[in-house]
Each structure stands twice: as C-alpha cells, then as structure tokens.
Length: 289
Image (cartoon, rainbow, N blue to C red; front, side, top):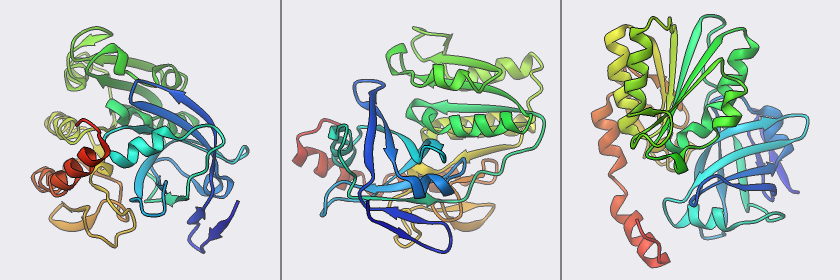
C-alpha cells in the first residue's frame, strides 16, 4: 500500500483494500476498508474522499466507523449516480485508487446531557461514531432513524448497541413509527424526553425540518451539510453555504454546522447546480435516476 502523509493528519492511502462488504439494501453497501493511517487519525463527524478510476470523479463519503487498532475505516455507499455505482461494484480484495482522509472538522460533542441523533436514509450511516463517542463521555443517547419503508432501514442493530433508546420511523408504517423522524421527535419532546443536544444527518429537506422543529423548542442542533460537498477540499467552491450570514465551505469548515444558523434556501439552491450533469452521466452509464 502506498501512502502519503501530511502534517495536519491528512493521509492518502492510494490502494486502500476492501476487506469486508455487506449489502444493506439493494442499492446500499457497507465496506470495511483497510486504511491504517487514515484510521489512526479519524474522529467522529469526519469523512474520506475516494476515487475508483483514473478518469473518475472524487466523491466524499462520511465515516460510519473507524478502528484504530485494526486499521480500518467503514463507509456506507448508496448508489445514486455513475461513480457510486462503480464503488458498489467493487468486491472483496479490490483496491480504491485513492482513499484520502480524514477530512473535515470533528463534530463538537457535549460532555454531558441527553443527545438525540437523527438519521435519514443512508445518512444513518454517519451516526454510529457520534453515538459511541457520546456514550464514552457519559452522555445519554437517543437515536431516531427513518426511511421510506422497512427494507430501506439500515444499521439499526449496530446503532442500537450505542443508543440508550432507538426509534425507527418509516414513511409507510411498515416498521416502527408511522411517519417522518420529525413527527417522532416532536412526540418525544412533548413527552418530556429532556434532550439537551440534537445532531441530524440525512437529506437536506429532513435536516431543514429537524432544524425548524428544534428551533421552536430551543434545542441546540447541528446538521451535517455533506450532501453539498463535491471536491471535499475547499478548492472547487461548490459547497459554499451561508451560516449566520457568513460564507463558509461545508467541506473544510464543517461538515457539521449550527442548524439554526444555516441558510437552507441557499443550501437547497446549491444542491441543484449539477443536476443536469448528473442526469447525463447516469444516462450514459445506463443508470436510472
């Protein structure tokens, strides 16, 4: 394995090897990657950038887990376009051409209280390292995860190991609470759950809804703006977002930000910038969107 190290802890494992692969859904895969130098420096809330082919794009992926002793990084990848399809086609023993990280700032976590972690879709994959670290600090953890239907719920068993309570929500009611994660969040708040902090990861509309819900309740909330990231190093400017009136980059200044300070209108506009290019790339690769 060839590695390049930098003074800031950033490492490029240029031939990081897949040592485990699991199907979470038909389009969502979990990979355990042997990348010891990246794992050595990883922290909750960070991400890696990977590349599959010499001419392919570099895509940011949040950390689902890291094991410093074993030298492994765990990631979850959902097929949404050409590059993620190429990633999910990789198998045991295959190498990533590039595997760079850890990138972004670690999420600022409290030392006490009761944190509620909210995951939507494959955003649930980023919650486990937060839950584990919070529990280590003595913080009570409640997790709320949601998906459209039972077959799309991921990592509930893994997350339950580091959660004092786990609440599953499905849009169609096929598992757990019938409705959105915000509906279950409001029920718990009304019942006096006593949450002191909230962290949400998932689709932008979900995070926006969580922010609206918690702001009305005065519950401090952080969201991960990883859906905006393109290059992941701050050079492309594609993930520029307004937070408290200040122009920041989701990749190098985040990915976690104060949800009540994020301008979600600007963030939503950013998400649409490359939709046409993504559509063309999928059509050329024979992928449905």
